[in-house]
Amino acid sequence: MINGVDLFGFTVRDKKKTVAFYRDVLGLKTTDEDERGAEFTFADGTTFGIWQPDEGQYPLGGGIMFAVDDVKSAIEKFRKNGAELSDVMESQACFMSFGSDPEGNRFVIHQRKIRD
Image (cartoon, rainbow, N blue to C red; front, side, top):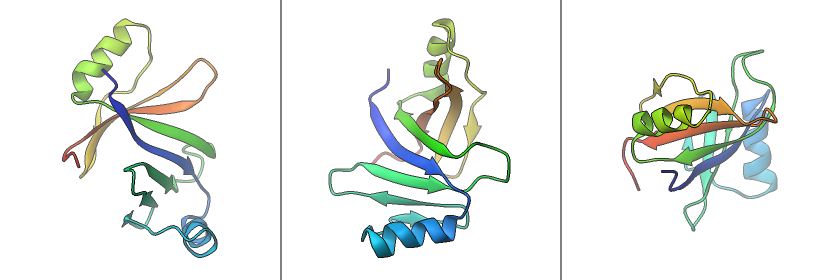
């Protein structure tokens, strides 16, 4: 059911400072940016992103968005297999369900509204 990775990323404390680092120091070009986050998409389609959550909402660290074609059926299957996943949340660009593995590593079951 998981057919790839839509995004690897980090949560950060200071979005502006972090974007400036990846842009000005490492030379990455933003492909999507708003007041809370930014994405950098590479020629092979891989996307790296950063997101600044509200204070205390999420710990700093890495995460992954696993790509699925139908988030609702995917989380139903994964829940039956023992995964603890949030209800589906909708943004302008996607549908998401949040979970963690047994070690506490965060992941998202992610369905883009428009596939590239």
